[in-house]
Amino acid sequence: MRKLFYVSVFFLVACSTKQVTTGNVNTDGTITGNGKLFATLYQQRAAEYRALCFQAFNIARYRVDEYKSLSSKPKAIVTDIDETVLDNSKYEAGRALQGKEYDPQTWNEWTAMGIADTLPGAVTFLKYAASKGITIFYVTNRDQKERTGTMKNLQRYNLPNADEAHLITRQNVSSKETRRQSINSTHEIMLFLGDNLADFSALFDKKSVDERLKNTNFSASDFGNRFIVLPNPVYGDWETSLYNYNYKLTRIQKDSIIRKEVKAN
Image (cartoon, helix red, strand yellow):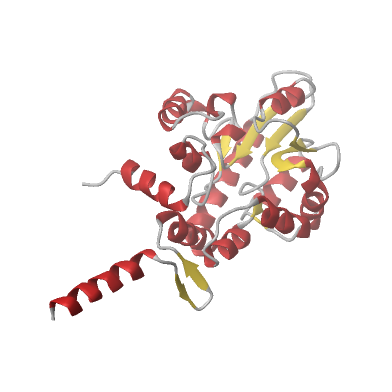
């Protein structure tokens, strides 16, 4: 009887640590595995997520309407693309259902198709801004080789300034500061739109969790004014800063860090 008990315990432990497949869902039970799927579901199906997007773009419209010019330079808005204009949740969901995470090859295949949907309110706002004579610059950390698919996707929705001159991809570094400064040299930037704080300021480039929180407090008056933040619970520097930007960690290692960092009673 005792032997049977130990065999049963061993079987239960083994089952709890191996990958479990149910239908087309393949998960290893980690927070990053199941969590990505749960967060993506929120992005796709929560009315609250949709409301947050509308709220952000409504505020952006108010800022455009009340803006007082500071110079004679032409006015511009600088916006990120992913999870700011384009919704990539189908890609994220597909990876999560396979028990897999982001990888460059499948991401490039996704962006090449140019079929991502848009965030609620994004198209309406950008077209409204353009109708006021404001130039839109799309500053993204997509690679240059993703340019064709990205342009195809933006033009799919007839977005303003979706052309070679206004789509600015990543070159050698992920920081957007140099690209922002280049635009600022020719245009007066009214607003920045993004889902990641590094979309707004170099204060947030590759900073630790504590530094990001500190610099957010420092920049508090900019949010809802110059900086319009879109919600993204699925990925971003909020997550990778937890791992000290170590992109080689396994899921189990990430899981351990998350359990250590999360606050509970």
